[in-house]
Length: 343
Ligand code: 5GP
Ligand code: MN
Image 1 (cartoon, rainbow, N blue to C red):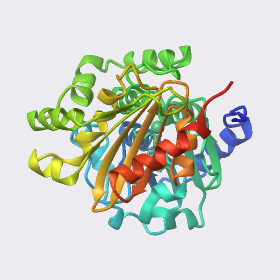
Image 2: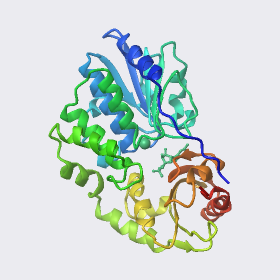
Image 3: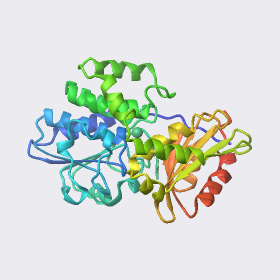
């Protein structure tokens, strides 16, 4: 049985500390913005939107980066602020301020983890209930639909007006993390934020097409193959059902596709009406899988993820699995019963 703790967001003291840390910076301070490995729309959008806001405030030495290869997934390659991106290897080694976006734990920061040990403050903007509390100033709101919700509030408290460039970044973050306003976290406040962003003149149809509805034909064929091998296990999760599939490096190579195209795969798998839990295993090395899990409400998949070394949210979580695909699926299956939501 799960005992749910009541999630609480940042206190007024946290907000004041974050505002003071930014306001204390001289214009020539070196500011490093970082986000989690394999950045998604929320990580990139909240980081770049906030970076553009700092630029409006007069910051002159700004860098944004993420761990691993400096490759931005194609759907995000038009975002305003991409000129601020540098490879992790070229990021300020000892910045005056670090601001971290959408990372629940230090392990998500790869080789950038040493930037948490700087003399200056480390601000952490996040919305994962599983956030481990690293860094100095914590703007962590588990009730926020996206990290961009937190970023927008900090920009407002810094008196940075929204413009179309900042809004495009934050809108991408908001739509990707809410599944285009379909998920439970889509509160009235989310729609009010969307309204403020749209009021800057950004075009939601264009943005959605670029982010969600534009893939190479090879990706469509690849999806067909990977969906064709999906397995349904109706008895798993105490009868709530599990559906899962996997995509190998060889699948990607045969269809000449980059790994980012697989990020959308979980959405096709989770359509399965007969299963509460959907899982996609994405091979990243011979015996290593990036695992995406989704639940429709019967299972807290963040419990499963944490038990297997990862993290995330109740209804969307992930971890790195080792071994064969069947072994990893077996380990997930074994954790499902213990992660049933009973209240
Ligand atoms: P996705 O399936 O879209 O990659 O991730 C869903 C959620 O799980 C995100 O909130 C993400 O932060 C979290 N997540 C995914 N993979 C990992 C992982 O390997 N480690 C941790 N700690 N969280 C993950
Ligand atoms: Mn997020």
